Figure 1 (cartoon, rainbow, N blue to C red):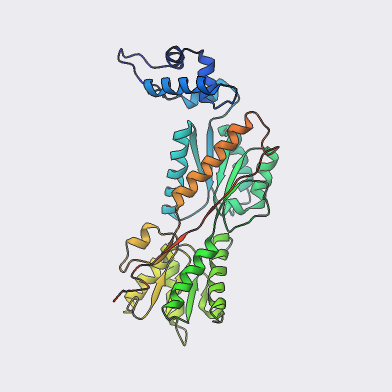
Figure 2 (tube, helix red, strand yellow):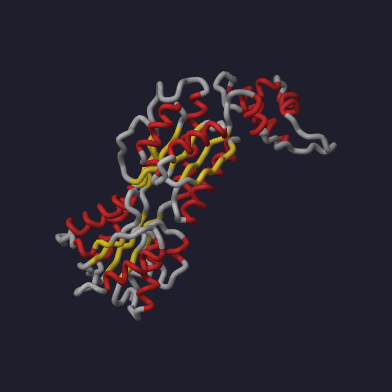
Length: 353
């Protein structure tokens, strides 16, 4: 994008070079964050860019040479709030760094998903990819990207990964889930149910493990009949509660794998005349708008999805810039970043006196 000068003429890279007293090639090197430019020279260029409100044309940069200035976000997730926050977080970092963002939804269960991603990367001339679950957990996808030698950053539920040579943004779902169930136990609940998200998502398994650990650490047993299979949907919460109410001894508390499931559980509870939290405590996960649009509002774990996404994009772009001069992965310490969702206590589990 260009900015119009007062005389109506577009501000160009040559205008920046003239004001900074350098060549336009030097301006280009500064914009591309090449390390060969002296710090004082780079500062002059940045001051000129700011004074002229100049913004580089990313498309032109891509066409001008072999270096790509676009990254991709590939996902398969039915949670609209999650995807919007992911896109906004990545996009904000791209704007700050002069990169474009290409968003590509796909079906992770498709037999052709790896070919689809491969063709998208080549067709769009991407410099790198951000992957979120479940694609970030699929070995077949990573194998293709490794063979292509394209930088990528994965967002992963948990605290470790088998592919530690590639940078990850880890989200500690297990610890956060454990904190939620600990909170329920501290309120006197001993028969606590779990409604899961989709199988095949590591977040589902991590949150279930946190649920189980909390029970066992407090001397409570894990009851298989209280673990309900589900998906990350409102309907799953409705169906899950029905199954639990059919038990001979229903639970007094329910931990749902995300806020959307928890909202469906709360809706079904109200339809059945069940007082929440008086007769049934309900908690979700993620702190999405679902958790704040219900009554009572949902206890949850605050997962800063936009910050997680922005961190993933920042890490990826840093890698890309380094790879302009050093082959990706050949040197330097691999960067891993960790996020710990925090417990948010609301009226769905606890009403203060």
